[in-house]
Image 1 (cartoon, rainbow over the protein chains, first blue to last red):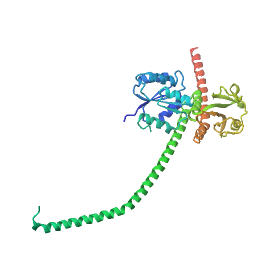
Image 2 (cartoon, each protein chain N blue to C red; image 1 turned 120 degrees about the vertical axis):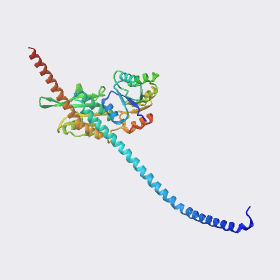
Image 3 (cartoon, each protein chain N blue to C red; image 1 turned 45 degrees about the vertical axis):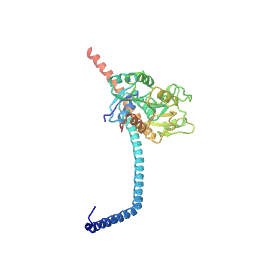
Image 4 (cartoon, rainbow over the protein chains, first blue to last red; image 1 turned 180 degrees about the vertical axis):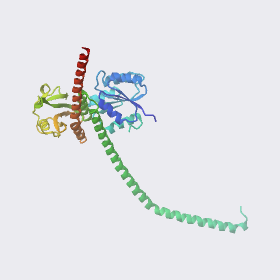
Amino acid sequence: MKPKKVLVVDDSKLLHRMFEMMLRGFPLVHAFDGREALDRLAEHKDVELILLDINMPRMNGLEFLTAVKAHPEFARIPVVIITTEGTEDDTERGMQAGAAAYVKKPFRNEELIGVINRLTASPAA
Amino acid sequence: MAAPEQLPSQVGSALDELRATLDRAAELAKEIGSRPESAAELSARLADVQSDRDELSTKLAEYEQQVGRLMNLYVATYQLHATLDPGEVQATIAEIAINLLGAERFVLLFWKHDGDEASGECEVAFAQGMEDDKSGLYPNGCYRGGDPAVDATLADGGLRIGPIDGSEALACVPLTMQGARVGALVILKLFDHKAMLRPEDRDLLDLIAAHAASALFAARVYSTTDRKLKTLESLVALVRRQ
């Protein structure tokens, strides 16, 4: 099975490096804020999963998620929010905006891999 | 229907068939008799296999956790030494504290120097979540002492993990370079969804203690040298023009 292309949206270089290590075998597309992520999506129409931080400059994660879910072409792509915003209100806000899963930082790698495997139906590790 | 003269031979063969059937029946009865024993054996073997499977499953989970820990350590080390920009190294230390340790409030302290002598106070090189700090220990980007755990770590270079009496610090991580104490990372609060520092966080704290200061020092030296080199180059260019 062809591995799914994953868009990583986070303003932390550390996290991008972490995802490169964790998701070996998955082609990754990188963006450091919401606006750049929209540009990357337009370039890579075969993205099948988005890993999304909330607190980012220029366009934050929730604004990006709202834009993605309003877009006829991208609305189908599952989005996993990965953030330090960990209250119940934050989680509810993210899920209501259309996220498929909500993971709080710091996360255990196996927890995130489990979520990704569930959403992509192809093994992440 | 068979003729009467053929009957004896047919009876004989029927009797043979009957005997064979009876022998087979006896064999089957024996097999059936021995089955309870094999079933017990099979159950025992199944229990063994299930036990092995559970043990392997536990070990796999442990290995996965271990791989996750090692991956965090590798990525943190890699990223600390991936740049020679002092600002980026500080940002990486902050990213490790936030994303890998779950720190919501923390300060990065470095000893101030008057020439070669330590001035007795630290500068706050980086602070996160300190906007509403009421402790008064870090005024105007300076730390002059007052938190016993922080003071002790700055003095002896020991890693301290709270709670510690009289201190609001959850962890005081010494920043050392070639044995010299150059500062400390003080974690004051974790995110609400992270109740406490976990055992595996200790590895990351040790890593910060060992690598953060040297990465930052190397970046600062490079930055200073690069600045001096550029000044010299522009001077040489100026002289050549004249």
